[in-house]
Length: 602
Image (cartoon, rainbow, N blue to C red):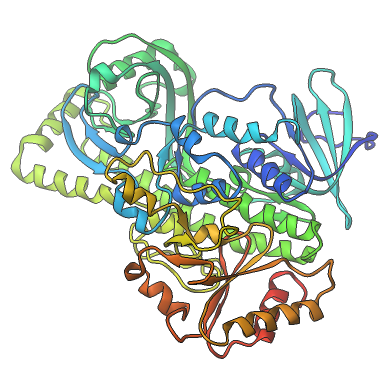
């Protein structure tokens, strides 16, 4: 038998039988198994490498990902504490070098206190290895992560998937039989290649180099501590990510093949570029350098048979505000809860067909935005003449751009246009399943009150002691602008009402609503059997919970018809997205029909 991608002459003995086999122990694969485990579904993770790369890679955990991680039981305060301090990661700078002039400063991804009206959790700078370790801790003793074992091939049939795996230390091949195979094995997914799913891709002609450094840049930047530095320098242009300004940064710059072909890059050449980026002399170590092509890829399908793609196996695009990582975590949330619903008996396997239909359009929009963001930065660098191979000419052009009045005005316009690069809130929490329209302004988040949208966030106070018994309160200790009494008002969100194990019906206590809920539950009982009935929890406004700031929730009350004397409501899926909006005329039959459609029982 050959190596990965080859075809075995015969399938080896089946050693393991498990409901779900996950390939890849990155953040997507780990979260997949964690969510499944919390819903009572067993899984096995197969990871090619014995140790994960220490390079920080992705670093920005967004508000939607925090929603997902919190609902999944991850300790959010502890995770935040392991990341960069908020005050050191709220900004982006355009600089001539780390020690040089700051040309412009931008807020990074809505980390201001006002964003708490739109989301209970704001962005935070946390390196991918740290996120992985926090999720992996949840799997200890409950999910096996089989490291040093490599995916070789798989065969789908009507009942499941037979996967051939190689133990890389012994050379032994064996088979795993599972109902579902989940590919979380990255942008070069062998699973995707094996099942024959092609990518739609768009690439530029630009090759970039990422240089990982161990360094303490705090003495250089002093109080100018940022999440990201965009470097505009005739000797070196690119970007520098401050994963941890006291120990770890990553420099990304364009590869000029005419000056230095990729095959000739070495540590000494990297140091020349790093020195130009720093603008001063401090000790550091070059830990690694890796080339990559600026481009975007989205799989043309997210599944084939019982094999599913998630995370970078389904899509990969340029690093921009953590859009790639956060898109992948939302993939897993969508798919894992649907698999759990099927395995727990209240949804049909056809439910899983909606996974790709819902998630692929989101990746298409996000990858387009990420690609455009990266192109905009590299285009600005080119416009300023900073890609000139003649460095004397490049310095002259750059000096003119900074000092000549007319050119400075043009430069200022270009720099101002970059502000939207660093505000993508609409992409993170404003997407609607079933609506693949590109947002007119990805920076302008608007709450949505339609099926497929994330339930809009508002702060709530529990009135029922049982309501939040198993839900951790939101922790805002990292927000210095709020007094303790203000933080105490912001402990729970409407999102915390949503149970991951079933459906949640939110109604008010207007006349007739209790009877309506009873009618819906009664029709559930007569439509489904006890083992196939979707779990349904009803919560009542002003009985089980109240809105902390009702004056800010008028749109919420109006669109869901939850105001005084109204008889509306909203039915929420396990993943916190809206399934059905109820009004006065919505019958129990309407509700049950919507549920049957969602669970594949039409």
